Image (tube, rainbow, N blue to C red; front, side, top):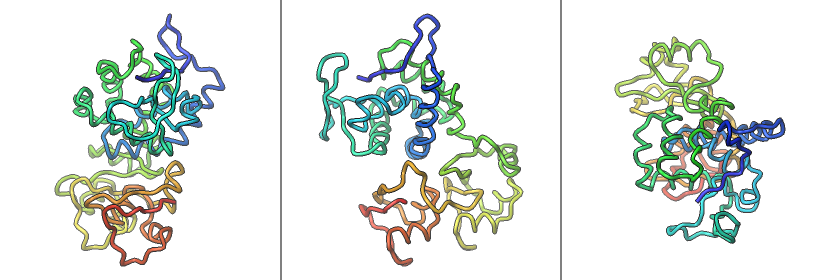
Length: 296
């Protein structure tokens, strides 16, 4: 079902990385890491695994299939696909592969592909930081026919330190060190570190753990003194960005049930007033299910 175009040594079982390949891989990671992180937040698939699969299946975005169809994961049409497709040679001539309008659509479809098929269900019981479990689990579930597929994924993850996108910011601040010491996980979105609120958390309790003033945390997260944290809320440790991550710019977010302009701004780590500004909306606008919110 999937194509694997990466040079591979069958004697040692590792990927062969030429200098040009390394540069292409790093460029791909820099361009698409935010997409992978976004998918991790929504579907609990490790960003490291998503990136490693995309790198392998698309040859760092350079495969003919990816260039002509935005298909970064080599996913074939299958029985439930009703969208456009392209023809490409794989196990047989002129096989049908899914075609997308953007890389973002491909990443989204990949996540849905894994999350909606029962044979991958056991993977979603793993911690999002368990990239090794995911790598071997994908191979065991039949994602690819290459017998070394799990090792290939792990090799890419570890060579490029992709595991940093699953949980950690590579260079931690004093507050981030304190977060680890207090048992809090750190996450990364749009180059900003955040923690997730636990049950019963307040800005004061998080502030004590991080040695930060609650008022500063409220300011960074654009909430007033009367806002009550809910379990799972995102709490950024620095001021949010003026723009969404590069890979997401000039795309649209379709409002889902329960979402608000504020929750969308938190999800993409963009300042709320900027989100209103880029969409030419007044501050009293309330997001409606199905609305398209322009990301910039």
